[in-house]
View 1 (spheres, rainbow, N blue to C red):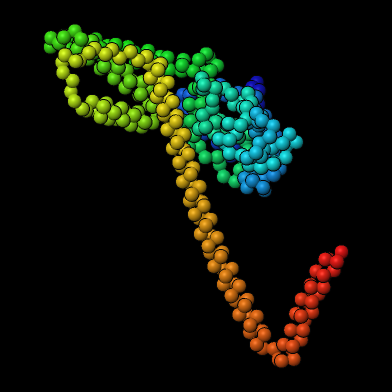
View 2: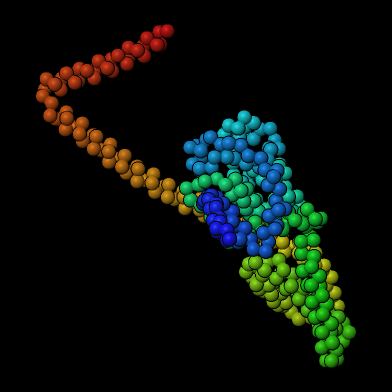
Length: 356
């Protein structure tokens, strides 16, 4: 006997809910982080403090929450207003003013540089990333631009370096490679110059200068490999060297051996400081230009409104003149009498107030 085939009971699968717009944004951001997606774990998002925000109509944005950035260092601020301790909006504040006048909370201190300061671009990237994590439903998706991703990566690298030790450890391997390449080039250059039978002083000076140039080139590529600033910086450095070398050429007897003794750490610090200052200036110029355009547009609107008001005033005067012209002598006399009574009442009221 054969047993009848048993049918497998059908299992109903629950439909997979579609991903929200916020989930898609987070997934897209993590994908664009690429191999550096693990660096996001160095941002202490669990320390972020939020609070509901009910004054959206006053600020013009759609964010239903606010994120605590820091506490003011001074009790009284003369030139700006903030949220008070009860969560009430007292007035606006610019990002630069907040960075200067407030002490950041733990959620934002992980990306401080070794001079205990926050970079404006890094702070904007971290703040936007924290808002993205809140999965706020907006009318349009959060813009995930290449600049935002690069700035977020840079902020995460600093947070990682701070968590593991010193920010200088951020590029320890690259610095080692730069030193090795510079030493190799110095050795090759010295061997080449030895074949040309140069004096010992020129041996040492030429090898040191070329090695230093190679070290600067490697360090510049290390620091600015994500942008075009490396080639620009090297071009400016070459221009300075060319301009500084012009002038009367010293005689061979007056030439002395000057040994360049610049450490890679000093070069890194100087380059980072110079680039950070230039980026801050560029951003400030861009903000000022945007503000100028907005003010010019507002001025044009005010001029148009002034023309409209003048035309309306002229039209009102013309209509009033036509109305008076259409009145009969009797109606005109009654109108004049009414105006005199109104003026007399005002004078009487003024006299009574003086007597009191």
